[in-house]
Each structure stands twice: as C-alpha cells, then as structure tokens.
Length: 119
Image 1 (cartoon, rainbow, N blue to C red):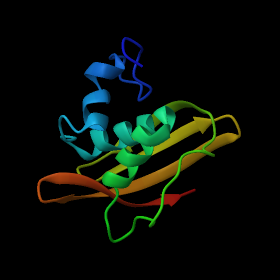
Image 2: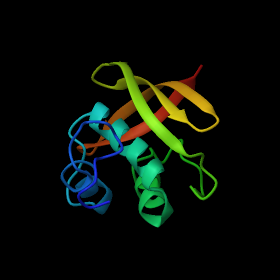
Image 3: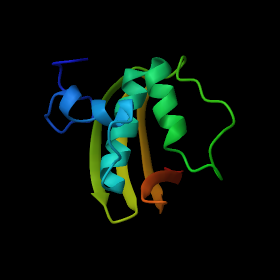
Image 4: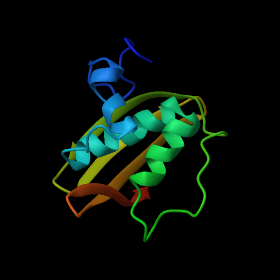
C-alpha cells in the first residue's frame, strides 16, 4: 500500500497515516485515530491487519482468536461524530453497511477498542 491513499479516508498516503500504527512505529493519539486505523487494518487484512486489530482490542472484550480472512470487501468509511472516548461511524462494504458507535479506553497511555453498539 506504499504510496497509495490510506483506506481510513484522511486523504494521506497509507505509509504516512495508518501504516506506522499498523507497524507499531507509533501509537494512536486519540480514539478517532485508533478507530480509523482499525478500519484501515480490516481493509489491509492479512496478518498485518489481524495483528493490529487484536493488539488494539481491550483484553477484557477481545476474542481469543481473530482472523480477517473472510471479511467483506470494505469500500469506505463515514464518521458521523466522535468524542474523547467514542466514535460513531458507518463502514461501507460490498454486502451493505455497518453502523456502530464504538467505545474506547485509554490504558497505560494507549487507546484500545472496548466495544461497540451496532445499529
């Protein structure tokens, strides 16, 4: 994805946007940045995407095993609103849309996905 637009929708190239987060070169500075980078990880898929999604999921609520092998073809992200520890968004994919209000928690200086209410 080097040189390509980041799938999170910021308009930046992947390697300057979510790429460093996925590689562990830096941490997300906000819940919104974490949510965008998690969406991008689902788009990127494979081991890189799955490792990042797992690593950024709060241990209390994350599944034991995570595979993105059968994820839908993601087609875009719309942010509806956000606060310090929540983001409401719609993730568009080939089979429809996923609308969620996600909650995040800052733990040991790192933002983590806690859970979400899908509607």
